[in-house]
Picture (cartoon, rainbow, N blue to C red):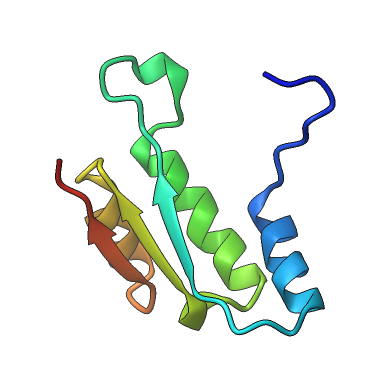
Length: 90
């Protein structure tokens, strides 16, 4: 942790790119701590929150949601079929 540093939230990232009128695609990776579930949000929480933020910002056509957690992409696909999803291996 660095004192004074600020971690931006997704809506702030969208607003920043909008302020530059930039053509930007967003590859959003969810981070789930599989070995220590108490250290991260559950897959369902990502599915409930991230796509809702994407939609509220009008960025559905500009995002792809990916994860090393193979539960999250199909859950996003089922709830929000218009959002592109993918999974990481490795």
